[in-house]
Amino acid sequence: MFERAALIHYHEIGLKGRNRSAFERQLRDNLDAALGSFDVERAERFSSRLLVRVRDHAQLEAVCRQAADTPGVSNAAAVYITSRGSRDMNAAALLAVSEVPDARTFAIEARRSNTDHPVRSIDMNREIGQHVVDETGLGVDLSNPDVRVYVEVVQGDAYIYSRRYPGVGGLPVGTAGAVISLLSAGIDSPVATWRLMKRGAVVVGVHFSGRPQTSDASERLVAKIGEALSHYGGMGRIYVVPFGDLQREISLAAPPDLRVLLYRRLMVRVAEEFAAVERAKALVTGESLGQVASQTLDNIAAVDDAATLPVLRPLIGTDKLEIVAEARAVGTYELSTVDHTDCCTLFMPRTPATRATVAEVRAAEEVLDMERMVADAVASAEYHDFPCVPYRRPKWLPEGVSAAETL
Ligand code: ATP
Ligand code: MG
Image (cartoon, rainbow, N blue to C red; front, side, top):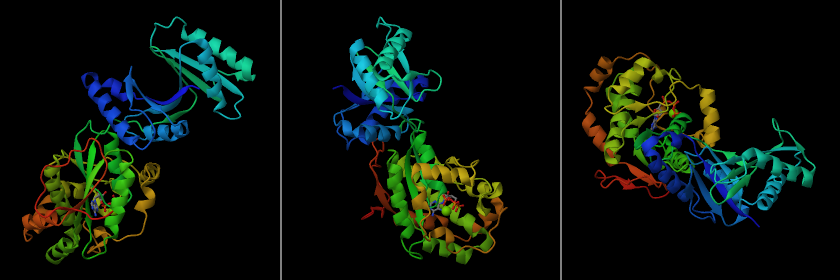
């Protein structure tokens, strides 16, 4: 009998001063897109909240969960929309209480965001609470109730709910520009990608596969990882670059212990070509300090020397176990642990350098025709696109780059 909706709360946006309305608009557009497959109305914006009316009440929980997974959302509540009359509010509060099975105690938490309503919150708590006690016999427990019923009174309506789904937080995708993420099919870089997405960046991935020296297994996995991340609305596109022949070329010409660093420097340069195409302002990697031989401070410096853009490493101070937990929560872990060979395991030296210097890697590169190698890599790239509202497709692409056929 009451209308139902997802009431979406966000907090950080409230801090953004002059940008606030742009942030709210972006979040609203992102939510409309994320909820496009449900039977819902478009999100309405009012006093620091968004409301999505759900026509098919059976979808309410799924709508709330999807909304909660949208960056920028702090929580999504499954509300009853009522008038501000006490009969309606009492009836909806009873329904909300009954949504938590086997509850023995409850509390009412009323809040007015418009003071044009004559009844004070504290009196509403009492009035509605008394009604619930009379009708159900439940006990009141203000500090640790089995069910907490929230009553939010706004201009014209009241929103009443007991179930709220914690959101992923962060900022709406599309409020922070674009980044290029060096995306392997491993555990770390999908999590690094997610972290940037969550902070409002549109992410374009660049994946280097071992093809033609290996199969395309890692390419298919990365496309699936892209789909999984696309659930959060921030994955624009992934470029896949066959890298096996270039690695072979490096391995034949360069000292074995420096190979991995030279592969990485080439990756960085290729990624920067795509950054220019995509107007992306930074690169992202999944490195974590000291995790493997290539991730020492010396080696990080030796690779960064090849970059002109900032290289963001959101996992630099994160332990493997924490990264694994995050990968599971985000939904990429299962894909990242499928057995595959990618270019990382190709032409690996037995003992990679752990303390290379910039001078050494520069000297080793002198025998290589870097410019041509970068051009070859770029020209053989294929890309996958994902649904992403704020992603602006580039107006031009380098010669040779083409859309991938299937996922
Ligand atoms: P991941 O779990 O992300 O694969 P890793 O623990 O295997 O990382 P490295 O192999 O040292 O660590 O890679 C460090 C970073 O370099 C990765 O997190 C990723 O950002 C980038 N990278 C490595 N291999 C590739 C690849 N094949 N394609 C794109 N980026 C890559
Ligand atoms: Mg890896």
